[in-house]
Image (cartoon, rainbow, N blue to C red; front, side, top):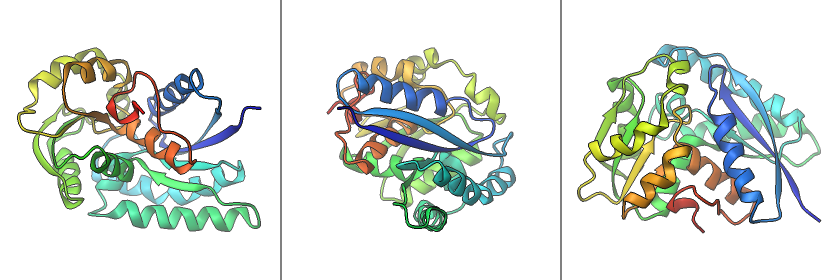
Length: 251
């Protein structure tokens, strides 16, 4: 008998990619493993990727955690990497603790869901693949990319090079062509690095190019979305394997 798991996602209101790529990866896994998944979202208002809008959006994450807890999800992922990283070093730990408490209070006697964040998942995944020195591709304006790099460096990772695509409108980020990523991956300096972050954003589409870029590199190629799936599967005590999703999920 197949086991079904409910996956909750806390997403920006303008995010259109997370609810595409996370299900796509887990549905690909369903072809090789018995577990099944359903997907449930709660949204926080955000249109422009600016510090003020990110802070206002983050304040709404507690409400989203309570709403997803009402759906009796097994795990919930705070799926906006830069919203966490813009709040200061190590903020994903405080956010996860706060959302866990909100969800636990909402469920009462029922088992509370596991809570994770894309920001924490990316840092943890990079350490898992043995990375110390990385290069990063991000859609953000340069100051926000700088915040992301500073955050990762505070987590013990050295950022060797970072490429900013400088797209402030979050809907436009979701419309970026993943077909450009192989070319962009050749543009960013990866000499001497241990891993490439192909998309440091869960809104920037990357899954269609992830395995292609991975096959062209002899280092792990990771995305924020793939890291979120990896951490989600670990939270469910399931084997973190997804075909065609890079070295992190190769099993």
